[in-house]
Each structure stands twice: as C-alpha cells, then as structure tokens.
Image (cartoon, rainbow, N blue to C red; front, side, top):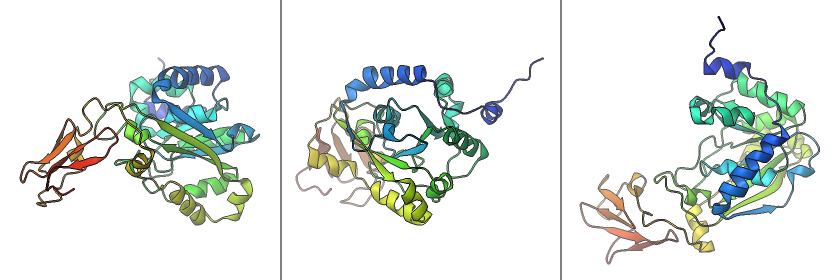
Amino acid sequence: MKEKLTIEQKLSRRKYCTPPKIVTWIYKTIMVDIVGRKYKPKFNIIDDVNDCDGPCFVIFNHLSRIDHVYICGATYPRRTNMMAAYNEFYRTKFSLLFGLNKVIPKKNYTADMVSIRGVSRVIKEGGCVTLAPEALASDYGGNKPIVPGTSKMFKHFKVPVYLCYLEGQYLQNTKVCLDERLGETHATMSLLFSKEDVERLSSDEMDDIINEKFRRNEYEWNKEKKIKWKTNGRICHRLEDFCYKCPKCGKEFTMKGEGNKIVCSHCGNGATMDDYYQFHPFEGAVI
C-alpha cells in the first residue's frame, strides 16, 4: 500500500526548480493581463531583471495579498520562484498553483532547511527567487522592519538583488476590509545591490539599506498623488480595528466605522473619509 504523505513530508521531498515557460506564460496571461488589468498597474522598469544573465533575487515591500500579480508583471518573461509563508501551503486552493509555479515554502522568522534547500537549488541552476523580507503584509499602509539577517542569505549566495517597489496596493486591499478597491497602483523595478555591492557591504549595512528603501506611508502617498478609489461606500468599514482609541475623550474600543464615517459612541467625536482616503472631521471634532 502506497504511503500517504503529510503536507510537511511532501514539501520536504519536493524538488524545486525553475518553473516551465508555459506555466509562467499562463500565469502571467491570466493574473496580469486579464485579472490584473482592472487594477490599472503602472510598471516602471529602471533595471530589467531580464538583463541579468545569471541567478538573482527580487525583493518587494509587502503591501497586500495580491502583490504576486505585480511581481509577475515586473519580472516577465523571466521565470521566477516566489517564496511564500509555510502555512499557505496548507490551503487547498493554492496547492495546484504553488506546485506548478514551484513556489518555495518559508517558515516565518526562522531558518528552515526546506526553504534553504529550495533557494539553493534554484540559484544554483541560474534562477531567480522573489521574496518579501518583511514576511507579513502591511497592517496599516506602512512598512514593517525586515526579518533580521535577511542579507546574510544574500551574502551567502553572492548574486545581484533587485528591488520591486510597490505603491498603492495596500489602499487597494486593506487589512481591515477585504473589498477590492480599484484605483491606480505602481511597481518600480531597479537594481538594489550588484554582485560587487553584496560582497562589499556588511549584512547589517544591507539590512539598513533595505529598511530605508522600504520606508512607506500609503496614505501620505495618496494625499500627494490624489488618486480616487472605488470604495463602494465602505471606506470606513471596520476602521475601528486600527483607530480603536478616540483622540478626543481617550476611551478605547468606542470607535465604530461604517460606510464613510467613523464615530466614537462615548463622546460623538468622529469624521468622514472621502474616496481619496482623506479624513474630514465633524465640527469641533479631534482627529
């Protein structure tokens, strides 16, 4: 009788390699050209990862659950292996997709042999590995610090590191409301560290540079860009998950967001928010 393997056993035995061209083409056609078209993505390629004739890494600031669409669009036709959180491999709907795209599992905030072995194999055969060093997507539209020691891996492999900097994706998919809010999004690809940079800089210096490059405030960015978002009249839905303390009376967990308003049930302090993600306080309110 054939042994029935657990998901953990399957992942540990899986052979990781560059995905087939046809799989990358199908994925790009569906996710970027068809599904992703509604997101109005703007790609700015300063340094093209396709001009790199050897192995490399592509890192990106993690703003939303659909960042993979932009990474695919910015790197195509280069075939890439994305790293994804280990727990995502336990979700049935991702099983086939992850398998075909040769996605590499990664246990957050720890070194694990499965991911190291997978990355080593792909880099050795001249491939490109994409990952989000913050490990988790943004909670509030700002950046998280990257996982300490990220650059130790880059220094170990001694290959170029590209940066795909994302803008607008959090406002499109906030953590508090699962609605897709259509507006305008950007992805800029550039070379962050050449092979010589990786060899010259210390891992701490590289970590500091990445954290600085990732510095982000989605709301301030949109205030400057003045992009109008299709929010379906629910822009404040569940906003109290973040704005849980009233800035006027100081009470906690009395704020409630509904429609385009957020109001304190204790003192009545509150504001409306427009489709540009800008607050408009009630008369005499504090925000």
